[in-house]
Length: 74
Image 1 (cartoon, rainbow, N blue to C red):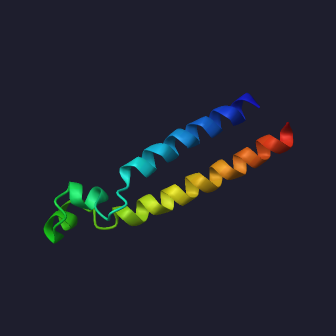
Image 2 (cartoon, helix red, strand yellow):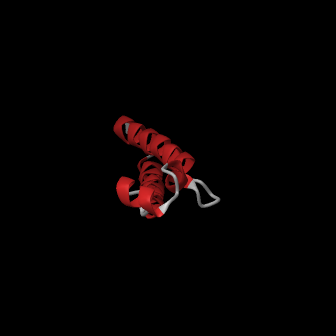
């Protein structure tokens, strides 16, 4: 049970960090690297928004699954 609690806390912290990196107005990491096509090609930031969205959904799903398992164990 302690390991499960630690995993839930770790995933929650990672989820907070990933959500804070995203910019709801469309800037995010793309604008941090200049937002131009050249900067996106050089830095590889053109698909960073897609990756962050996938990571957010994955972490959210894992958090939900682990909390359901913790509820069933207790």
